[in-house]
Image 1 (cartoon, rainbow, N blue to C red):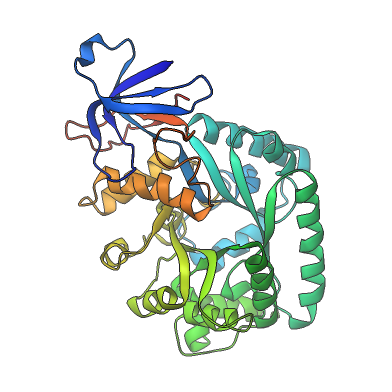
Image 2 (image 1 turned 90 degrees about the vertical axis):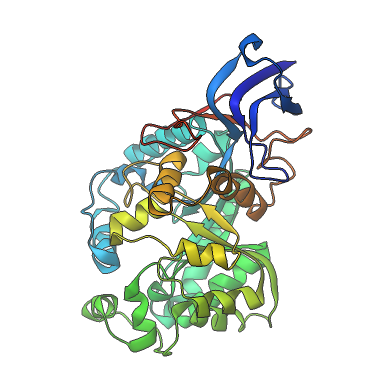
Length: 395
């Protein structure tokens, strides 16, 4: 039997309130046995100043882009960011790409990420994921603005799905975003995702998605400059356009697990429309990436007020300086200081596990589960994160 005690134990089972001067006991394989309050913290063989939390669930990452760290200009907006992706994505050899992503997969694990919803556009990450102790569900993201290319794009991504399956990786196609896909491909990719039961979608990440509403703006001009077709102008928020495309697949409601990522420009109208028809929807926050590209963050106060199920991701090293879940939480705390740490941990641990249907194993520190145990250190006197806070896997 193993035992660790800490200033705070966040079990996240029924409450976001921690056990103060608590302990957790666990078997050699990491299975939780029990938790409780330590009668005499000074007598504990292992006592940590800080918080012990369940393993994190990184709800949105592009680990295969890790070779792009430090190469991108900040504050370019989405059109400028896409131009940089097109220019730099293949600026490293496959060998160097795999070396970089393997390093960051190991680092994510050591910092306490137990599961991840990861985006892939190729098979570079497959062998690393197959060998990792981290659970990953891989979303095979597709692009294509020309309607006539839809069939070929879907055939290609289904071959990628086959390769992932052969390596034991849970993977399926998923659409990217409204502005990089023809209506036909958006529906076809979404249909493949819904077959698998899981869909991840970049939603309302940028004001430049106004191309859907008004047929104008930097993204619209970018597409036209390169001779690409543009999506239809609807006069409504881009998320409503996505919901319309989903209903080409089957009528609402949708019971599948859907993750809407970024949500920087989310409106109440769009959120209400999504919640009305998506019965298992989660909303991913990637605040450091949003600051990197747009110098903006999502409307978290509105999202909390509406009771949306939030998750937390790091996005990629093309739009972030690091892949650090505690850094993302500190960014949220800086922007929204009224949010308790425990609530943010629910987003970063339990809710992500529920989206991935891994909540029977992880997400909470509960007897019988194997969530991983993570130390978050250098908290302030009130138990809140500081700029120096970091995370370390204990189990």
